[in-house]
Length: 321
Image 1 (cartoon, one colour):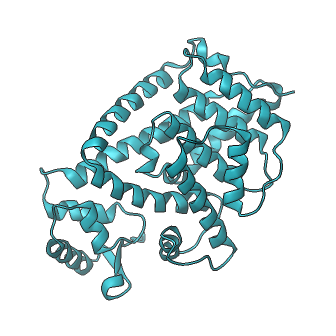
Image 2 (cartoon, rainbow, N blue to C red):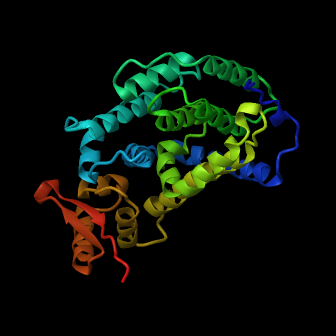
Image 3 (cartoon, rainbow, N blue to C red):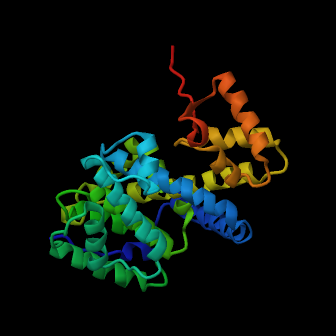
C-alpha cells in the first residue's frame, strides 16, 4: 500500500545540482519581486500575455487545440466556446483565473482539488479516492517542517497527485493548476508573467521522461522523486530566466526602440496588436510602433492577421528547405 512520506527532504542527502538550482531560483525570485514593485505596469501586461500562453499550452499538451485567434477570444471572454475543445479551454481559463485571483485564500485540500476540477470540466467532479486524503495530510505535515524546503516539496506532491490519477479526465491539467497554486502560495510567481505551462509544452518529452522515471516503483514506495523534481525546478528556472530576458527587452534603455518592438513581437507566441505592444512599451510612441510593424511585414519576418483596428501581428514561421 502506498504511503506518503516526505521526510527524505529533511535528510540533507539531495543531489548537489538540485540544491544549487534551488538557490539560483530563490535569487531570481528576489530580483523579480524588486522589479515588480517598481514596474507594475510592465508586469501587468506580461501577465496578460502569459495567461493566454498558459491556457493554450496546458490544453495543447493534452491534444486540446483551437486557433490562436480563438484562444485569445476565449481567454478575453469576447466570444463563447463553439465546440467541445473550446469548452475545455474555457474551463481551464476559469480555473486559472481563480488561482490568479484567489490563491491566498485557497489551500491544498480535497475541496480545492474538486472545485478546480469542477470549474475546469464544467461539471461536478467525482469523489477523490482515499489516497488524496492521505496526500493532503502528508503535505500538511511536511509543510509544517521548517527543515523541509517548500520548493522541493511541491514537485513531490505533484508527482504523487499524478500517480494517484484521481479523475477519469483532466489530471494533467489539474496538476499544472495545483503546481501554480502551491508555487504562488510560496511566493514563486514567475508563472504569472511567463507561462509555466508553455515551458512544459516546449520540452514535454523531457517532462514525460521525468514523470515516467519518478513513477517507477511508486505503488511499492520505491520510486525516486529526483528526476521529476529536477524537471520541475528546471521549468521554474526557465520561467525566471525568460522573465528576466523579457523585462530587459521591454525596459532597457541600452537598446533601440526598434529592437525592443521587434523583440516584443517575435517573442509573442500569440497574435499581438499594436495597442498591446504600446502597453508593453509605454515609452514608445504608436507612430514608431506602426513604422516598425510596416517594416517587419515588408521584410517578411511577421504576418498581419485581420484588418484595420482588429489587426494583430505574429512571427512568420519559416519552413526548412
